Image 1 (cartoon, one colour):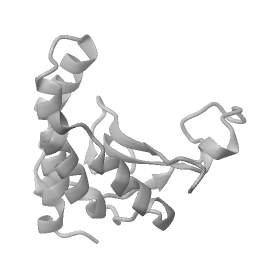
Image 2 (image 1 turned 180 degrees about the horizontal axis):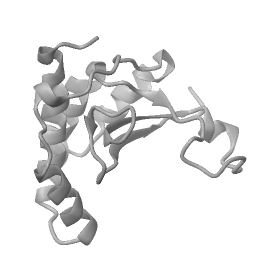
Image 3 (image 1 turned 180 degrees about the vertical axis):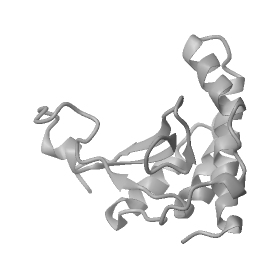
Image 4 (image 1 turned 135 degrees about the horizontal axis):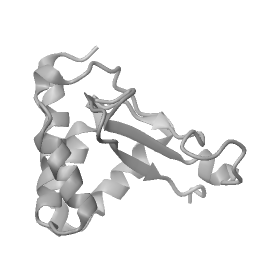
Length: 142
């Protein structure tokens, strides 16, 4: 299990997401998200304890993806990189889609997500907000 010190990268990641959204104010969804985040206790002490993990087959390409985030979002990219080992990453396996949806095996088997804020299996609990990160790996490795 994580301790309070290992929670700090996740808190910093949410801070960077909040900052990135703050400079893009205007759209209703951005305002609603910022409002929900402002109402939350986003501290290391309030973080739920999830077992950090990342499926090993995603590690290399995840690092490549993070390293290719545009330079104007470098603080966010650094926060993602710093927090990746403190987050519970899960294969999607289609749980966000209608049962038996034809999303294709290459999609179903090549993506993962983490829930930063939400009702279940999230770093921070919220009834009002669901926020996470999604990574889609390329199904063909050269």
